[in-house]
Length: 422
Picture 1 (tube, rainbow, N blue to C red):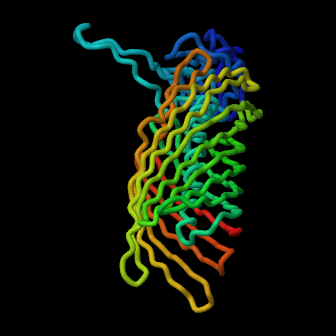
Picture 2: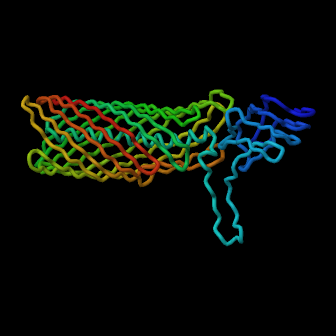
Picture 3: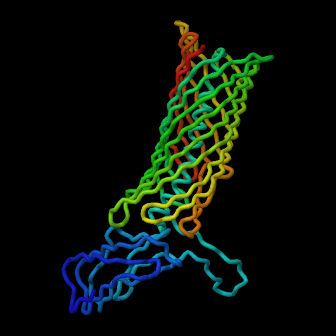
């Protein structure tokens, strides 16, 4: 489009681009450009053949005019383009993430800088963040189950039925994606049977569970993960206070992402994947005076979340690698067993621990671009809870905790449980 003379006032210009081949409409102003104007750009969304892309959109002979992008940016493949002024012209540009040569000589080793999170397209950012979210969901559901097994240590019944509800919120701020929030809700139901052994008991049980995780990636981009879980557990309780909790579980995840493109049109993508793993916790209860006790404990939890691939409705090709998570936890709790007058027993406690993620990082391929996904797991946890024994058959439990570490904050994790002893 060519305009003879000057451009003044306010205006909107609809333009088309194919940034994959660095081609598009060009607005030529043969005079000066003044006023404020908006470019509404529709791109094919295909992956550019190289980073550091550049495409001139407006050519002027000067002036004080300002041009902005409708939607703030244009996404093309894995990255996003912004509008920048270059002398009298305006161009779409994106960062150059390729290796940078040595300035003095070639003796230094080659470098391959990672793209900054703010340079990722909405689709890329959502795909990378979903890797983190799936692993966080896996660990949250595992932690809820391990906490439920602690209920067995209040009264040694012969087995029973139980149900537990969980609600957890995470805030992530990693070096591989833009900050996002995650909310997890879930329900687990199970049953177990006690087997008497020399100097203790062994509880063998199974469970099923469902969960829902919702992610807010910002800029209107959302993610959702529906989980279905089945598993088995065994708990050994020694008469001297030593216990061992073991869990094995399998989960099926249904993953969905939705986001608007820079023109406001909805873009969707979805895929399914499986996850499996085990967790072991070992501890010992030391009984003190007047019902007080301390319980040091260590835990090791391992999981493998299979990868997946999908093609979003705008043509973005996503291939997510498998995620291996290995977390250790060391900590303990301090509690008191209080026997009430009406045959009830309440056991309040406080707890603290440190969690370390030993693996967790993975890769996501967006079209032909490899991006890293980070699982921040190192954090400190603090919380409180209580177990209420109602007679010989009914038991209620509450557990709440807060956690914070590098790149991760858990404002809350609340678990409510009920157990019916057989």
